[in-house]
Length: 218
Ligand code: SF4
Image (cartoon, rainbow, N blue to C red):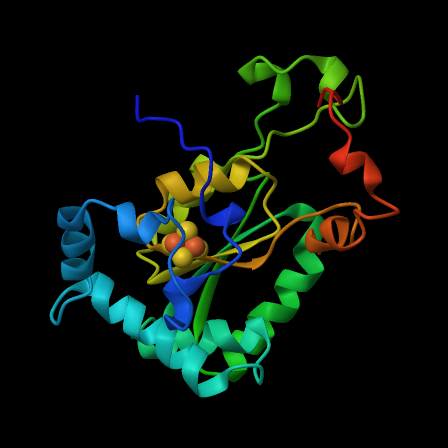
């Protein structure tokens, strides 16, 4: 078990690793990192390495369009730069309308898409040990979200880039784990904030003070 650090980047007020225009704090993760690990990770981005090509494509999209493109457009720009033509979409049922619009946008930009809904396979929740009490509509057939099958069906299609549209917390984790293709996210589900999870943080000084109250068991 690694030694527990009292301070990490979230406690750093300097962020000197970005521009090197201040100084590094004593606990700095850059300063204290094993140099071998730093060099090894840098090698992953070397010429001829796929991870390097992906990192450079992401940086090109950021540098070219900083603050100008929406995320929908950035995904297309990124796909074009990594040579992805076939876009897999792992969508939540609650965001199927948005997915249909996204499909139209992809098509308008000459990209193919293949969509798999979270409820694919239609397996009742009780079949995997989820009690009826935990169903949204108790006493009814209610299919599990099936991110593993979503990933496997997209793997079968040999998609080049998979895009998450609003998968639940944890279901997204499983989807990412089982996807062969790279995964990026178009929409991060937050049922309460209209899919903008940052809202809870932005308003935690007043409306969402409960976020900061200790002892709340979730
Ligand atoms: S790497 Fe160092 S300078 Fe950068 S945020 Fe972390 S602690 Fe601060």
